[in-house]
Length: 121
Image 1: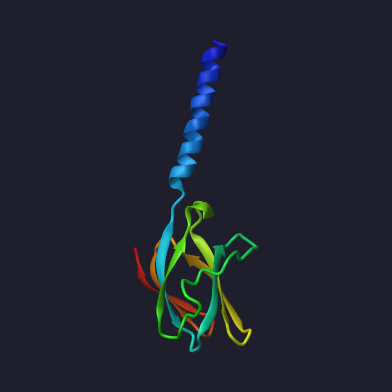
Image 2 (image 1 turned 180 degrees about the horizontal axis):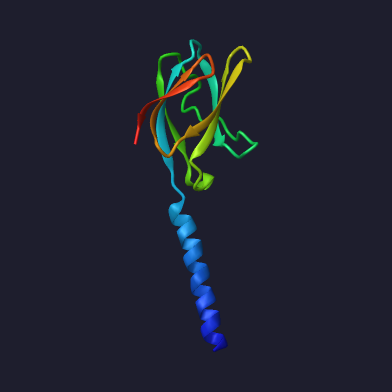
């Protein structure tokens, strides 16, 4: 009986672990710079995090009017809500909060600190 109970617990633990991993997802969306300035850094982090992590710009600069692809890795887990921080060359920055990356296809960020979903899933 103990062996059966132990086997059940092992299988339940494996199932729980597998379901957590399968629900983690890499998220990709486009961001259009409508801030009026060239950006030098773009940081994205889960909304519940206090750490910005690394700059995600694929190039050194993000020109006004241009669009980049943002890739959020699976290692960020299953969260959908993200914050974004942008910086310009003059040490200015804007933080955008509450971006739902799970429904997002294209996002426009504006110089007044607002953003719009241009396309959603």
